[in-house]
Image 1 (spheres, rainbow, N blue to C red):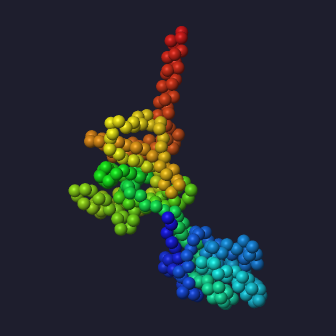
Image 2 (cartoon, rainbow, N blue to C red):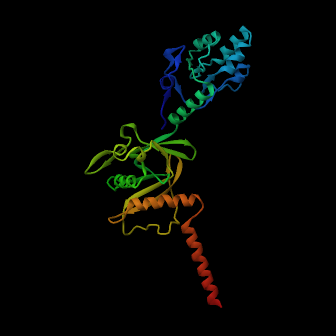
Length: 313
């Protein structure tokens, strides 16, 4: 699922000046890439990306001024394709009359900003990548533990929020409780955040809803975090086999992206906050190339080989 962005959203977000076609601001924007039409201004329209926002700055408009009036009119008429979401002029530059005429004929909104072209383009791209990214919402708690984004999952009442509260008390940071909005920024990157309505809030049964930022300070929360590790909390089952060495590696798939997953059994007496801290630190060590379980197995294998060699003698 992706959010929908319209030209009207862009006008509101960046305080853009609407120069033509107020009634066309409902047009959807479906790609995050922008296009600066240098080749089109020179007359090459073979690969004109009409699905993108068209951004015209000082370079493009200065080039147009050097063309004769008839050539400029023809180029801009062909440039103003009806499928273009909108055309944005930067630096509050004067808009060529031929561009206004072509845009009105094709009913393409023309907008203007006072910002510099490169800076504005970067801001718009970031905004669109965030709002057009594939997304989903999962039931869980997202915590930043030693710089590792840990997504706690499990059935209702298993202790996710209480564990998150203990982790916050130990100096870690809460991102989201109960509902985690997850966005895919690129192929292997998932970022989680909290819905605005419940941001910084934590629900503790028997106490109620608490505001973590108010109680523990701004350093106890953050707005978003990349998800690096999923920890599934489940009630301890005596007949269930749990990994005791750490060699069994599982993955959890979110929006077609695989995230390393650990399953931690819950029962009275287990300090889940400490276990999750250790899991996060161990995850960081694995990324640095140190795998304690594999090293143990290698040393054990070597010890057995040495013992066999000694017995043969």
